[in-house]
Length: 216
Ligand SMILES: Cc1cc2nc3c(=O)[nH]c(=O)nc-3n(C[C@H](O)[C@H](O)[C@H](O)COP(=O)(O)O)c2cc1C
Image 1 (cartoon, helix red, strand yellow):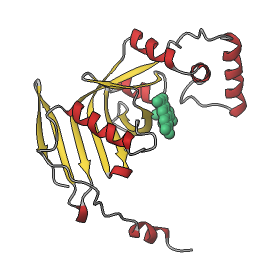
Image 2 (cartoon, rainbow, N blue to C red):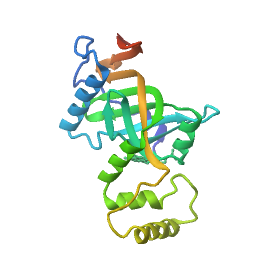
Image 3 (tube, protein in one colour):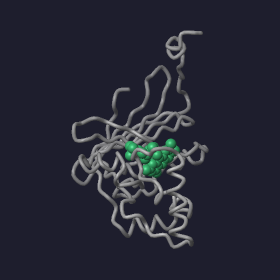
Image 4 (cartoon, protein in one colour):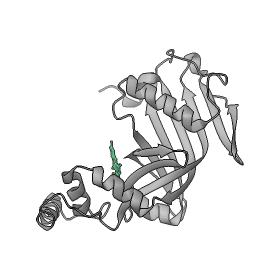
C-alpha cells in the first residue's frame, strides 16, 4: 500500500476562481456575509448553512462539530440544539464560540467569533413550530450527547415520544432551544493562486467595524 501520508502531501489545489479586495467588500459584515451566502446558494454548495461550531470547556479544552445556521440578523447567528449536550455544557461554562463556513465550490471560508447567548423562548418556539413532526419527536427522544446502551434504546425513546404526542401538537422540550453567536470578528477568505489568498477581516470597534487585510 502507498504511504498515506505521502498521498496527503500531494493533495493540493491552486485556487483561481475569484479575488477579494478591500474595495469589493461592503462596510457591514452581516451584509457581506449575506452576499457570500447567497453566492453559495446560487452555486448549489451542498448544505451551505452547515457551519463548524467551536467551543471550549471550563479548562479551555476545545471541541468542534457541525450545526446548521437557522437565523441571521444584525444581532447574530442562531443555531438550535439541546442545552444539556456537550456543546450546551461548554457554552454554559464559557459563552464564547467560533463559527466556520467552508464553501469549496467557491474557494471561500468565512470565520466568525464572538460571545454566545441563549435565544428567548418565543424565538425558539417559533422555530420549533417550523420543524417537521418527526424532527420534533426526535428532539424529545434524544438526550443529546448522553451515553446510550444501544440503538434499540433510542428507537424505544422515539416510539414513546410518538405515543406521548400522537398529533401535531408537540411542545418544545424544555432543554431544547437556540443559541445566538454575537460576532466581534469576521474574516472572509478567498483562495488565490500560489497561496497568496485574500483575507479581509472585520473587527468590531464600538458601534462600527474596522476592515483590514490579513496575510495569508
Ligand atoms: C450536517 C450536520 C448538521 C447538524 N446540525 C446540527 C444542529 O443544527 N444542531 C445540533 O445540535 N446538532 C447538529 N448536528 C450534530 C452535531 O454535529 C453533533 O453531533 C451534536 O450536536 C452533538 O454535539 P456535542 O456533543 O458537541 O454537543 C449536525 C451534524 C451534521 C453533520
